[in-house]
Length: 388
Picture 1 (tube, rainbow, N blue to C red):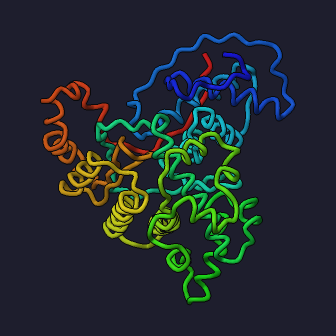
Picture 2: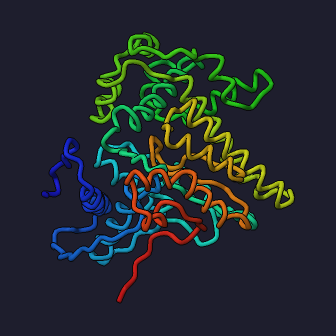
Picture 3: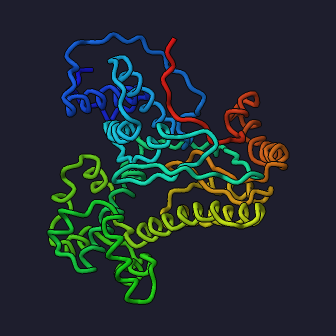
């Protein structure tokens, strides 16, 4: 593929993620004034144990490893923060409007720590997890085809959140042209929402959402009357956003904004909990509660779950998980469960019997491959270059 040639988004192939890294590196190098005019030969072998479509960031891992390999082949070494931002941009060549969290943790992860990822600018804060608990990853066996279904699922939510942010900005005092020009994400209007909540004696941005957005879905015409412009015009810079507009019948702005702001609050509550003076048992219970609340919000407000994930999450809780939620983009893929360390082997055995055995019997998966679909996990290091 020529460097200037676009990826064929209608013919999705796994190898396109390597091309994302290839194109992204060259674009970034050129922006930095780094020459890429002298060709460099590559023999590439790709191997991995992350099931595709599992919601475990396999695409981000592929893009990150591809980008870093190409960087190393050119004898370059970019800082991790720059690599995290670069690889986020890379994956957008595949047609998904990725937010960057998966790429950031793929590059910036450290053994033994969770990472609190902040953006604009990108930065990571180490979060020490409590002992006594373990995270068990379990695949719902519903494949999450993020790139294939982007217009109705993943990218649809990106567009809904952007439109919710613009409408919130206007409702809270911004001029329409100002909101259209300057608002891209809900974080851009969070300050306005908090200020509004402050006038009501609160600091919760969700209060503003509940006051100024209606719960019923908005039609395109209703949004256009508020923003005083047409949606095709304000989203026209992005072909993937235009695909969303063609497919969408309505937009659930209230629900998406409520999810995003409440989920951000839970992220900081998680960090505050592990930094608190709570006993280990109380800490684990609180963390589990936050995970359960997160899944409920993903399922009901963001609507990115599916029947298989709901069944799996419920079985996790029934078998002693302190908390369980979907992970990744949703619409399939994996659940992550917080489990007391001393019951992990029995917990995994119970799930094998209660969730996976019927799938084995129907030939959905091979019994010998079960270790790929359910396993305990600990935080480990991010991408690295090995030289031989």
